[in-house]
Amino acid sequence: MEGGRPSIYPTLLYADAKAAIRQLTEAFGFSEASVYEGEDGLVLHAELVQGNGAVMLGSRGRGGRFDEAMKGAGPAGVYIVVDDVDAHHQQAVDHGAEILMAPTDQEYGSRDYMARDIEGNIWSFGTYAPEISAP
Image 1: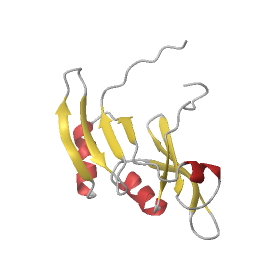
Image 2 (image 1 turned 90 degrees about the vertical axis):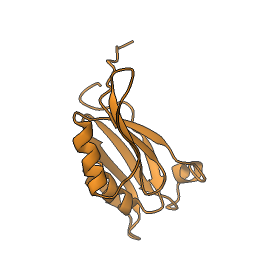
Image 3 (image 1 turned 45 degrees about the vertical axis):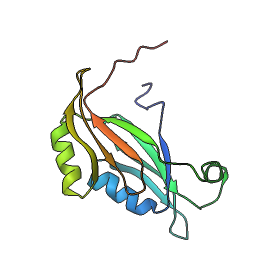
């Protein structure tokens, strides 16, 4: 990470971006960094933060080149590093998230769980955080 900014941002579009923001913040512990809405109430752009990473999202059907390019795109999978997998999992359960895999110790040393968001994207949360070397 250079200058305190991630260099990769997963970017997702939702039919109901406001509901997705609510689920990602309440169930999965993200924090809103910014949310920009159009006059029609659609989310034009939002940034949610988790640890030292972030995800960008917006509303489907708002027009523009990215919306057109993403037309018909299927669900995505995103992995998020968390310190306490069991507490994070419990928060997701408490807020009604669909859990696909309960917290599980992996052979490679990670502990993680998997959930599906309200529009089918797969979110994995775990302790695996490989060190990335600069090229």
